[in-house]
Image (cartoon, rainbow, N blue to C red):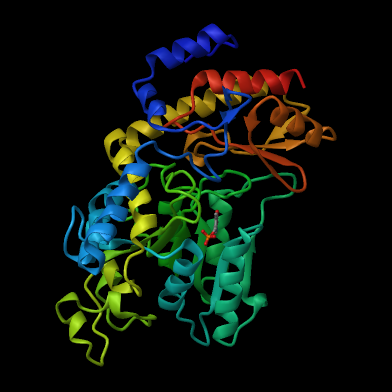
Length: 416
Ligand SMILES: *Cc1c(COP(=O)(O)O)cnc(C)c1O
């Protein structure tokens, strides 16, 4: 498509956008009575207007039934988490038995490392991206220490001199270089800083070829990329639901465990009663028998209130369809990039240009006046995010951002 740098063109794209009405299903934060240009959905997604009603249903069930709410009301809490299996599977490209919603992201990452980092004397290294999100680094670091290894056993991937992103061929070469000692490749689906989307299918194949496993932190990929975790043979994945998935601050988290591991009782795992075989759970007997599927990794009973907020959002995703969202997202981000490129020189877009290497996010490496431009954006009603030392991250989100949003954003950048 031949883009044009005019408000009329931006508005014509909005008029043709089949998903344009979804914006009305969200609260857009205001500044001085006007809608802000909210480009921070990669950090905290906006609140669906329906969320309050979903919460209200569970508050009312608690009010009306007390403990009996586990079995009574619209969505008996006893089975609440099961409602997520189908829509979550559609969202990430999994079988319903391969996914479960529980806990929070960093907790789940630690739980997955317990099961999927099984070092031996020969094979014990973990590969991560250099500059990984700190939580991920800490989890890996502590897991290594727990097994008697150390940070020297972390292989950190870094871009070639003068480049910002990792090349898939280089990642694979690094996997091959450590073929005999590599236990696990653990990358973000999309790097939180650069916005680079990793080629999970290819990387997973390469990891498996040398006898290692591959897991992904999809914090910035879930609700953003169109994924096929099952077909890609990913061993495990975890994600949070408050970024692109709009499930509210501190919201619950999702987990994927590939079918081939789902019922493997030899995997080490931490346990709690909610992962125990449902049929005998309330017999309160000794001896852990895991449930079949990813549900067998649950520990605690479901957090109904955050999960109600998650359900409100997931129902919207299921209706809109991640494939459709992704199509719009490609166009929206490409348009934003087109508008920004005209001003490149004052900053560098460090997010890859190719659509298969990125999602909704663009990261702008700023020059000397970076902080000034950011402050101006803020004063003009743009909500974006500043990452030290010098990066502005923006994420035009297909569910609620418009082409006019990105036009107006770029206009403010250009006039800064
Ligand atoms: C947002 C994010 C987290 C946050 O973890 P929580 O447990 O939800 O606080 C962790 N890892 C990555 C890669 C993230 O982007």
